[in-house]
Length: 298
Image 1: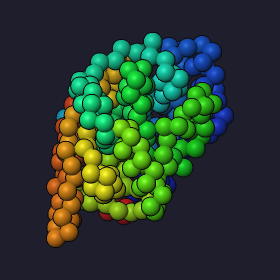
Image 2: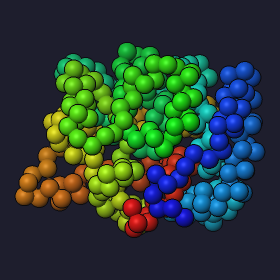
Image 3: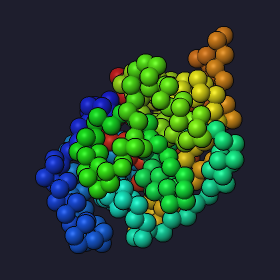
Image 4: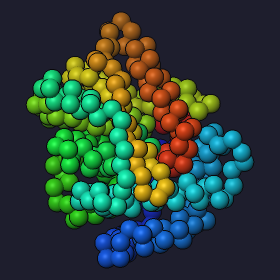
C-alpha cells in the first residue's frame, strides 16, 4: 500500500465522474446519493489499497471490530461529501442544513484589515466552509497541490468558471509566497491543508491516533513568514444533509526562533494533530486520507 498520497491517483475515471455529474445535475442530489451506494461497494471490493487504508485508520478510532460494512460506510461518506462539492461549487446551499460555530473570527479578521491562514484537514468538507463564507461576503482562497485531482478540479471549473480565482497552486520559490502575502495583506483569508505532506517533503513528526505520523511543515513556515494569525477550520458532515462548521483560534502568530526552529515547529504540529485526533474520534467516518498515513516512507 502506498505511503504517499501523491501516488494515489484519481480512481473511477472521467466517464464515471461524468455520469455522476449528469445524475446530480439532472435528477438531483437524492437520486445521485442512491447511485453512490454501489459505487462505494465498487471501490471497496475492487481497490485493495483503499480497503486496507480505511481499515487501518478505522481500527484506531472505532471501539469495536472493523469489517467490510464499516469500510463501506467510510468510503460512502467520502463519496457523499464529494458529491456535495458539485452543489457547493455553484454556491447552492439549499440542499443542506449548515450550522456554524466561531464565525465571529471572520468578523475579527475583517475589522483588523489583515488576513489570516485557515488550517484545514481532510476531515469532512472544506467546500461547505468556502460556500458558506462566500454567501456571507467572505471569500476564502485555497492553497494546495491540485495536480493530483485534475478531473474533479476540471469538473468544478465547468460548474463554476470562477473557481480558479480561489485556488492557489503551491509552488517553490518567492513568487508563490509573494502571491499569498499579497492576499493576506489586503485582508484575504487563505486556507491550506495541515494533514498531508506536500511534494516538497518538508515534514514534522507527531503523535496521532496511537502512532507516529508525518505532518507538513509548510503551513507553519508560511505563517511565520507572513506574521499573520492562524485559525483551525473544520466542516464535519452528518447524514443526510447537515454540515457542522467550526472556526477556532490556533495561534496569533507563528514564531520559529532560529535557535530552536525544529522544536517550535514540533509544538505547533503536535497541537494541530491533537485537535484533529479529537475530531476524528468524534466523527470517525469523516476523515478521508485513503493511504497509509502512518507509513515512515513519506
